[in-house]
Image (tube, rainbow, N blue to C red):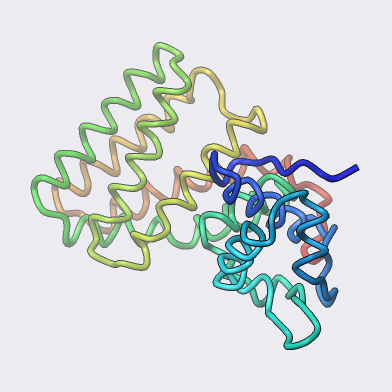
Length: 243
């Protein structure tokens, strides 16, 4: 019986097939080095060849497959993937959540304190005010236990900090942080009432940015990401560092 493609990459058929193939590559059901033909994918996912070709074009742009003349498509190893593309992040979060959360959280620990320092140095008044407003939203929704509202404000806060420093590479990390926060919630690690210290540290970051104190902003953000790491570390305990 043909497999029915399902997923979150989009509501249309192309999006669902793209999602299904991407997740099969991430999970190893389509392992590195295997060569498949478009016709085999058409049968596997029970769709037309045109839909398969559209999905393959995206996967090729992500470094997940490569066409080989007269043979078909070769599935590429993870080392070839555009690893921080939001689609790849989402597929890995769905298929290997422990490993993906660990890798992304370690990256977050390295990046976000420096991003906060840059924001404190280069943010304009409007950006600083927005960051403070988002910290206030986090405190309000956190104290009332509104988890979805808190998550939305939290993601927006970190997105604003990453962008305020004027570093386009840090700014592009915002979708990754949003996936980390969503993954934490899906793993049941987001408390309904956030710890008061975490709420205060977000205010400290916002205040340091507004008062142009880079080192203070770095220190407060380092506390935020270190606590997040500690709270999630049980998810990847015992997980090997390499496949």
